[in-house]
Image (cartoon, rainbow, N blue to C red; front, top):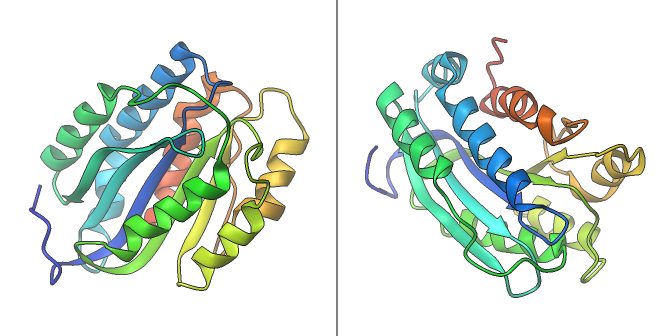
Length: 211
């Protein structure tokens, strides 16, 4: 993995913003980490990166919960080779919560993720926040405003709601969370569906879906 270099061009800078609020049980958090790791190890992800103009993406992992609970579990990494993907997948697979679980401060998480992209140590063609979670914002209730602040900066927000039987959560993500160019939602029906959903989502975000 290349060290951060503001002049280094990447096709995509991606913040994986993962919900760690009280509604996410310990085993569900682990499923999310293992699911992201498995998706990054999938050969289609490497093929998608290789098909880009720069053959390189940048990725960071943000864990979020309540108003004061945002933590970068994996700092910005430049991903080119299968070895790069394996290394970051292993780091994500062993990631732990950095704070006590709390409320679902989704708007604050979006603002924090946008801040990570504003100080990005690479030259990115596209900047995307990938938000996954199992509930609505119950802290500020101002998700739309945070989304709009990110979009005006040229950032796209995509969503991965973990529905757990809720028909309303995917609608909430579509109407109040996602925004920007080519924004989309990929819904996981439940936590067991997370791995396949995050793989589809990553491939759409990289821009060269092959599965």
